[in-house]
Amino acid sequence: MSYITIPQLAKMLGVSRVTVYRKVKSGEIAATKAGHTYIISNEEMSKALGSELSESAKARIDEAVKKTVREYGEVLKLLGKE
View 1: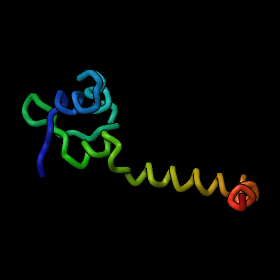
View 2: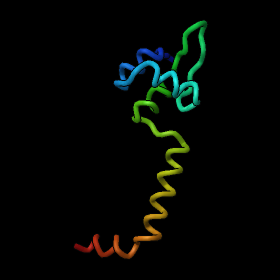
View 3: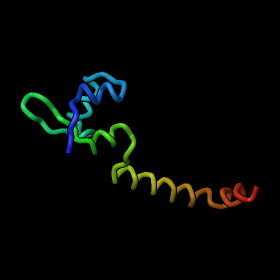
């Protein structure tokens, strides 16, 4: 498994290092401390970049789709016929 540093991820995301540090400290981005440096796995990097969804994100999307179908199912059916 390969890793990147917080400054590298910040550059990829187009945000400041401080923003990424805050996300690490809040637990939004998982990182491991190696000496004085935090390192982030490629898997976490993919999640941060939005190219991979976490299980909790998938669950939230599934619930939103179910709710939409429950509330607007008939309208969606009618729109699909056009």
